[in-house]
Image (cartoon, rainbow, N blue to C red; front, side, top):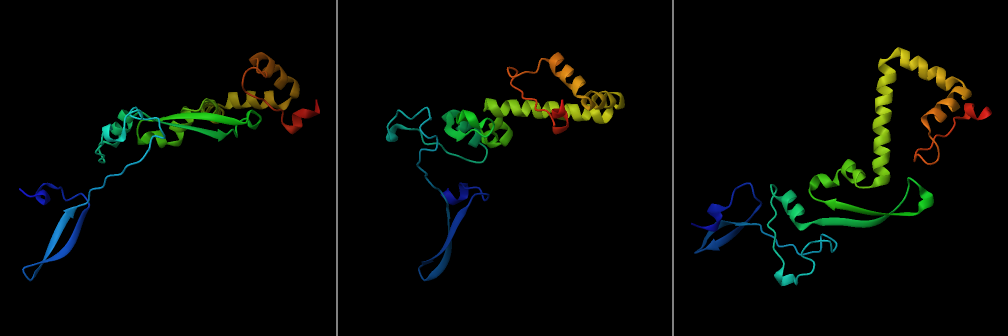
Length: 177
C-alpha cells in the first residue's frame, strides 16, 4: 500500500507533473512540515530537556487543545495598567490551555483588575434589567438620585468608601452640595 492511499483527501497535498518514460504523470505528495520554535516562551514543561530529547507533537485540528494543555504553556508579560494608571505596570500570567484561552473574556478572568471590572459589568446589566422591568424600583432610584442628601445617605448605608475597591464619583449636579 502506498503512502498516497493512506492520506485522507482533506489534507493539503502537493501535486506536480513528472515525466516517466516519455509520458507525463501527475504525482501527489502530502504536505508535511516540521516547525521548531519556543512557542511557550520558556514556560513549557520540557524546557530543561535538550532539544534532541524533547517530544515532537503531531498537531491536527482535533488535538490542538490537548497538546496545549499537555505542554503547560503560560504567557508571562508586563502590560501598562490602564485600569489604575498610578500603579504603573501589571505583571500578567495567562495559562494557555486551549484556543479558548485567547478569548477576551478568558484573558480578563486571569487578570484580577479586569476580572473585577467584568463583575461590575454584570452587576450593571442586572441593575439595568431591574430598572427596565420594575416601575416601582425605577421610581425609587430616581427619587434617591434626585437629591444629594438621599444619595449621600445611600452611600453611607452601603458603606461604599475608599476601602471597598469601588469608586463612586459624584455627578456634576451633585457637587453643588
